[in-house]
Image (cartoon, rainbow, N blue to C red; front, side, top):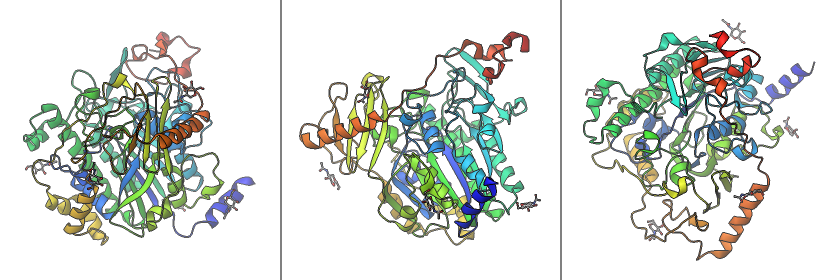
Length: 536
Ligand SMILES: *[C@@H]1O[C@H](CO)[C@@H](O)[C@H](O)[C@H]1NC(C)=O
Ligand SMILES: *[C@@H]1O[C@H](CO)[C@@H](O)[C@H](O)[C@H]1NC(C)=O
Ligand SMILES: *[C@@H]1O[C@H](CO)[C@@H](O)[C@H](O)[C@H]1NC(C)=O
Ligand SMILES: *[C@@H]1O[C@H](CO)[C@@H](O)[C@H](O)[C@H]1NC(C)=O
Ligand SMILES: *[C@@H]1O[C@H](CO)[C@@H](O)[C@H](O)[C@H]1NC(C)=O
């Protein structure tokens, strides 16, 4: 009897049709890997069109690495509150996002959404109950672990190597050789075209791009696209450019399909990276966070300031840059608000519902962000208003510098933005801004740090303090000149630290080695009482 009552309350809150929610996640995309942040080197016209028609999230923060980021999106909680704060889940690691957490698609399913995940999961796969279709998704086509080769769909990491591609629970050997981004695009279009329009849609497209794959050839792009990027002399970055252009093309095709089907006019589209970019060979990759400091899996701005935008006809003040502080954990309450749920009834979230603040350009309720506390690495960072504190660092300081490429050479192809598939879809709704607006927003969103003189910082020796508003590139360590602020920031960090639970990482389980399971990364924990070899 309880169920209809609950349903009635939540339905009564809804003023309009629940909008479709399309959540596109890029993997390892850097701050400077999108045209709308000032990059000329690699065109991303579809993303640029959508960003300039919606809201460019300018003070937008993610967590520094994959599993923690995805856990934050799904739960609305900081990784220190779910035990997910230290590194990623490995394919043979017997752990997952704790089952005590109710996650985004589960909430949306409660109010009638049809929920689909395409692409990467990375929140645990050693038992079925940790997998997407046991956690609120009606369907999943994609992979379970952290990365795959774009063509052969295997993941080689640590001491194992296995095939990792699924349609639901079935191993999708038939997709071998098909470029991963194309598979996701086609699946997304299939979902959109077969969706029952009288029900709301939640579609999560969780890309492999632009993550690197396996050590033998980490960056893999369709050969024929390389000719478009011969102006990039670094061959790895040239391939990266082709990978990125496939990602941009996918965004355009998905938006086009939504428009063609008549779903776009009642949709909210989110585009976000999961963490900062792996630059200059980090993770065998060639992303760029220029001019920000640091890389993926560091707490510098290059690791945590994210490329992202929000698009929807439901936004009241469109075509602008949002200065509101926004963190990945805010998506869950923000999207549940859009979906008509009573967000104030949700307990113990770190996320804040920012729908109204974003839509109407009001002051954000968020004044601080805990970037992470990782006592295993010995690093922590927190931002309060304009101040950022860094204590300790990862990789013993080896990735604490500034990395390129700037990609500012050449010209911006604004015409390509106007001609992009996404722009045509937006124009059909009367929502594509003119060229001047695109250029003006882009100029405003381009971070410049050329005039700054350095005051050095060594977070391995003592905490560093930055005024991020004036010094987004973390060049001037003000720890010595602002002792009072430093002290209060350290206190803030200590308060947050008291709320942390221990990380739930586990040693790799040799029984999970794909060699025992037909060379496939699998939910080996479900077969604990069986002899692995007897199954294969
Ligand atoms: C579409 O959804 C509506 C509302 O849930 C339902 O009544 C209808 O039967 C569905 N149509 C099809 C073809 O499944
Ligand atoms: C690559 O170049 C070809 C030929 O100039 C062009 O038609 C195509 O749109 C380009 N593709 C991308 C992704 O830039
Ligand atoms: C929303 O939830 C809060 C907290 O549970 C409750 O006090 C409030 O009455 C609810 N609002 C509506 C409109 O149901
Ligand atoms: C650099 O320029 C920006 C804006 O032009 C200004 O706010 C900032 O104070 C300048 N920094 C230095 C160190 O001169
Ligand atoms: C957080 O608290 C734990 C346990 O008291 C301590 O070992 C750790 O050093 C603290 N971390 C930070 C960043 O203060």
